Length: 131
Image (cartoon, rainbow, N blue to C red; front, side, top):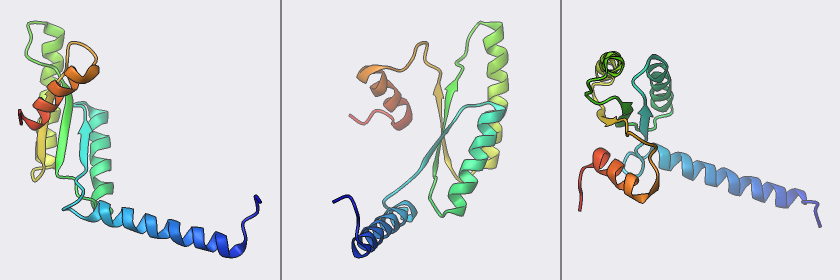
């Protein structure tokens, strides 16, 4: 029972190949798929973003949107303000490296994003209020 015959194995491999091809076509079709890259405004985040977008471009997968997450909001805290200045420089670099892409900033929440209410707030920040 557990042994596949050659014809069955070939049939399964062919079906898998067709599925992979359909998935690849869907990823490459701009009308069906848009990859959204999410990063943080730090050196490592920028490096990884550049590598990711380059890999997507090479694979002909559309990435028209970038979300910069965990941006520190305006504050009276000296440490936080200093980090915000650093983040602002990375955000400027993201804009200059990816001028043709839509870039959305998401401020750091004062708590972990949990539950449907927080997800709605996050959705409004990213997509606007569409009610």
